[in-house]
Image 1 (tube, rainbow, N blue to C red):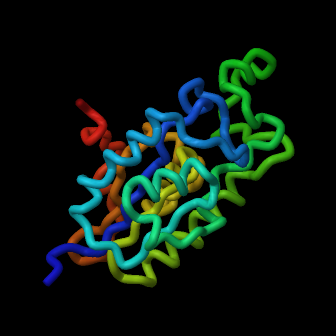
Image 2: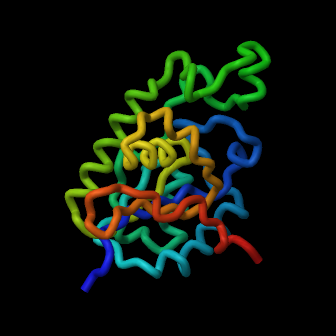
Image 3: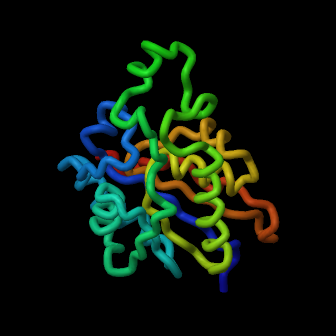
Amino acid sequence: MKTRAPQVVLVRHGETEWSRTSQHTGRTDLPLLEEGRAMGEKLRAPLSAWSFAAVWTSPLTRALETCVLAGYGDAAQKRDDLMEFDYGDYEGRTGADIRSTRPDWTLWKDGVPNGETLEQVGARADRIIADARAIQDDVLLFSHGHMLRIIAARWLGLPPEGGRLFQLGTAAISVLGSEPDGVQPVLAGWNNTAHLKG
């Protein structure tokens, strides 16, 4: 018998060439680095603490590879709504590079030219959350940094730009839950990378 409300477990993909250099990686379909592949394998043990009713992954290679390496490739369903923010003209650029011409720029305040808006990404997050809540059991998601931060914000009832409050490392595990009565959404765990140590 369960003594807690269902949880949504979020996993950011392992390291890529661009995540290592802090380049905005939206729809560019980069593979994991060897270190990123090792990170994926290190997810197996901590994720075994749950029994998932559903496993969903972004179809982009870096998330899908992480999912497979973590041991969930056979169970996973690809969901386009879990793809990373479409950064438009800022794809492949670092924040520092963008601020060389737009000194006060942040994704959360200013968005990106010719890409998605925060509202559009927030709508994708809302669809994922609604589908996960409908399952009424634990769900595992493999996705991307900004997307998962926006999912967390929306889970807590914050606007999409609330994602700015949540730092998230590669191959980190985070947990969205609820108070025991199942009514109040809470952050049950965030940015856990203990499994990557050693």
